[in-house]
Length: 137
Image: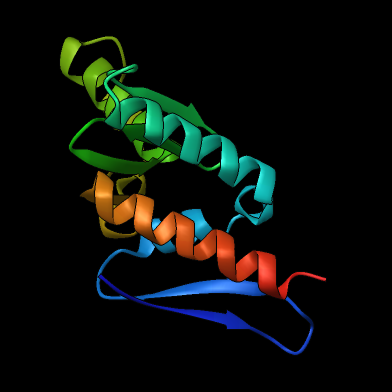
């Protein structure tokens, strides 16, 4: 996974990933991931998973759900989770499909999902944490 850390003229830090991991990039660039303490907490969760003390972690914030397992990290936009549950309702007959707008059913999932290995995610998280530590005012 190739990435660049950027600090703009206003002192705002951001991460740019080279590739199709837009959701992962957006997750890192969210305000919640600018906190060293929050990153430390997440790194502790990863350590617990790697040591076998925890099998899975699911965390939510206003925009994304993150799921960590011993093998992978999956990030998915909350709206996509809602769309999937809505599609289930439609299939089960509990929702009138004709009332849905066509564009609502054609969501761009590429920007809403990202997956990577847990070790790669942990490495990126540690690098991001260090970058923030060095560059935040």
